[in-house]
Length: 239
Image 1 (cartoon, one colour):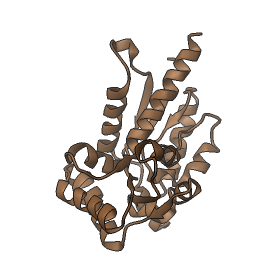
Image 2 (cartoon, one colour):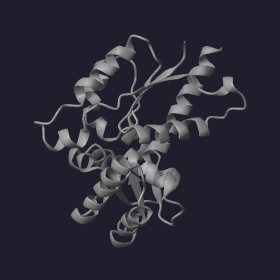
Image 3 (cartoon, helix red, strand yellow):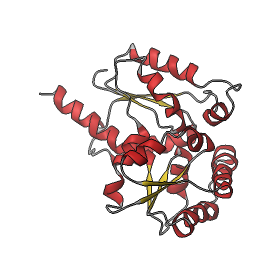
């Protein structure tokens, strides 16, 4: 297979399934051959990223992710996609292991904010405590000229409950809790837009029903960028 990309997924598997669904649903296809060529590595046994970020004595997820990059690089994909925000904690290290570009999920998300709320000033971030702690979104948001708004401890705890206790453990979404978190960020903390900085929150966005809160879903942005780049590469290959 030529002109394909590789998805390093499984963090978690349900979130990766949502990413694949978004990717395929948004691909402009009228026949089988119009869809994109890709390899999915659903590496579900990668150690928890947040556990390691908060406690370096825990198993290091970089080790298996680095092996995935090495293995897949031998197949020469056009680019890599890692639909896990927290895994971008070691993005520079992973990129240094291959000449093949890796799409940067947080960076692409922040770049897309003007397309959602053109005059946004205060950008809220909800994510795992690992992502909140490691700052993978912080500099991207500040460099783009926005004021970063992180949740208070209660809201961060509620977000972890939604991600780990509901979606990861029970494979279900507490719509009321999800909407409450968004309400707090928008109404109490005056955020103009809220970044969904965890792929499990993308699951919540897909399943929790309509709401009035302005959000930007990092997983949807990554899917859009993946489609754009894959189609561009396909066009260039057929010239």
